[in-house]
Amino acid sequence: MSNECVAGTDTAETQEPSSPARPTPVAWVLLLPVRFYRKCISPYLPPMCRFYPSCSAYAAEALTRHGAARGTYLALRRLLRCGPWTPPGRDPVPERFSFRHQSPGMSTEE
Image 1 (tube, rainbow, N blue to C red):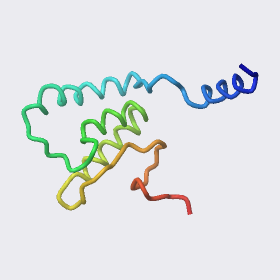
Image 2: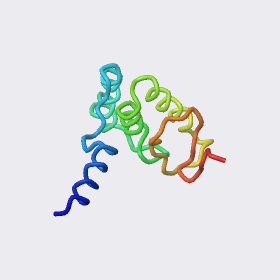
Image 3: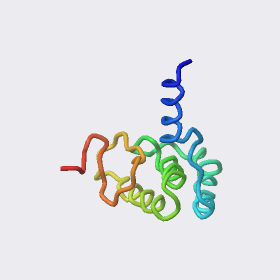
Image 4: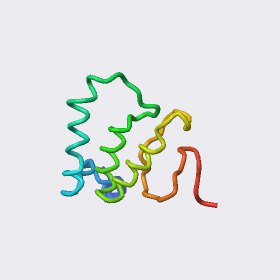
């Protein structure tokens, strides 16, 4: 194996961590009601979410990825969009946090 291959793998590992995101302690506490809903309440309700992933999955991922304050903001913003006035579809958690709502194909850079 050449040194170039080894050097290339080192830079890739430092840019992208191999372990999944872990929630902060405050976000972990905020995840408790979401987990309770998903395990104890959601199985008894028919699937009604207009988006993919579901609102509870979105909230869990947002809290884990972006922390307590930003994750809560993203989750509340998503819940407010979940209604008959919004077209359904795929709405993933953004990779980078922004206060502006960005559709998956939309760019905020101009």
